[in-house]
Length: 373
Image: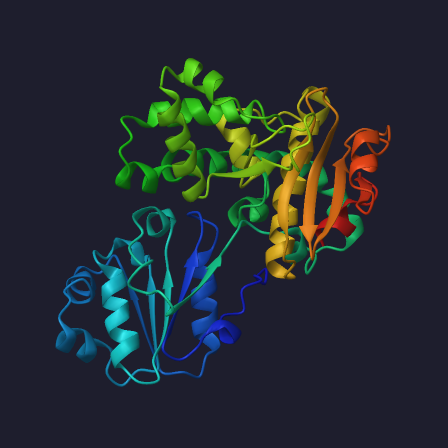
């Protein structure tokens, strides 16, 4: 069993709700159950699937809700997004049951519906659970073994079930099931989206341009939507833990791109499932895009786990000078160029001249683990 990075024992606080967000099938329930097996707190575990629980916690009835939690030190609610008005129910619990701790896990519906935002202001601790990180996998594999499996991670990603599956055929089955049955489930349930086909088409277009700036006009033309609708759908897909945006870095130099966006997928395997492309790297022309998507998401996982507090960007000029990843930390800039091929890349002259104090380095197949572990 692989150990996940969320240490619930350290995160739990009295009179607080620990909210664990994340895509479906990344292991939120497993993390919760593993913690409950070893905690000494007197707890009640429940689920949003339970009709009676939905009636109680969604009722706004103080006496009924207080009675539900009486005598317990911890209430753990899995799939809490299924409970109507759950934010107010949890607020009643933390405000009126002394010494109580609460854990609530939820998929994209929590973020999209904004059920818990306002009621739990100042009363919650929020954490995201990603697919497995290289940091977590390093508990099982040494660096040599991780490098040996690199192609597997680039093609099949790092959903827990996928990592544990023994054959490529089984990995593909799992990814296609997630992509077809789970990926957009919360988005379609809560948002004003006419059809899943539109979102799938939009995601396929994004999958084919990972590492490039997204043009809303181009996406609108190809999906037969207006620009405002495309922009709204991209925001929904990001809140739904499907894609992650990266904005361009600019200090308003005339040659720098300003307020442009790139989009990456939370998981390489999902990206490949959307375009039904699981060929070996030797038989495909998008190895560089897969490499960039992998490094971006693994770096984000590292930033969360370490933690590393950073503003993240990419940098590009109108004449195509670029740096894939920029971090702004403690007032200092760090530039990283991602290279899949063997040819190294020099620091762009304009970047060096403009940001004299900034650091620059190339992340390649030899040193990438230092960047993400």
